[in-house]
Image 1 (cartoon, rainbow, N blue to C red):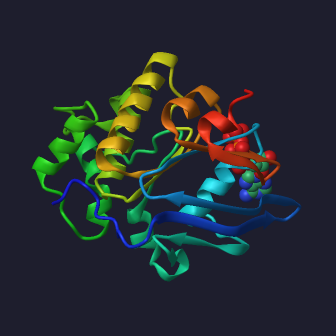
Image 2: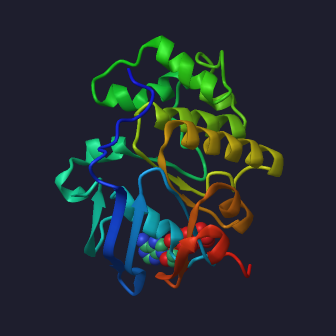
Image 3: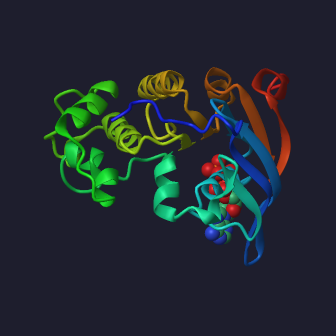
Length: 235
Ligand SMILES: Nc1ncnc2c1ncn2[C@@H]1O[C@H](COP(=O)(O)OP(=O)(O)OP(=O)(O)O)[C@@H](O)[C@H]1O
């Protein structure tokens, strides 16, 4: 199985949100945001707490449904892609690793298993090695540290060979040194696989280290977007 996801070279945008709006009773969560993410770009989403960063990210793989507007994946309205295929193509890693009861290896194989595909042991081992967890395949997930659990969660997402990786504060539940290790791991994986990535972070320093472009969300609105060093120049 190929390690590097095969992107459609004909379309330059991996992901596009067009006038995306979502409201729940009494609150506008995402207020007409339009954003384009080129293939291979890493876009950071920053902004004050409660400004709607995670709410917007969840719209990008249809975990939540936009009330209005369109999200396109590789140029295609994502509502025309089945949710199962969409979630495979647009992988997500959350702040805390939500692992299923069982072994590390079973968790890594979960995505392909859901599609009726059995992930070969050699592939599970290669993924675990890549995230720094060689020999962890038979370990019970109950006995993992926070950093190890997040590594498993990254390997589980990579097992689906996503074209796009969505990261929702992937290091903010970890202590400082573990957070830096996980950040470095994620950054290296994104680079070596030429993945497109959107990362929500509360840390401007993290945005500077990982993202070529940054957008600021304030009160559900897109306040600013551009090259990270320009957008965060005054911060
Ligand atoms: N389904 C919902 N129903 C009602 N309010 C919601 C819902 N989802 C989110 N909110 C509220 O909308 C606001 C934006 O939440 P969101 O988690 O997107 O912000 P955020 O910028 O990611 O915040 P943080 O940096 O603190 O994680 C918050 O006030 C939150 O409580």
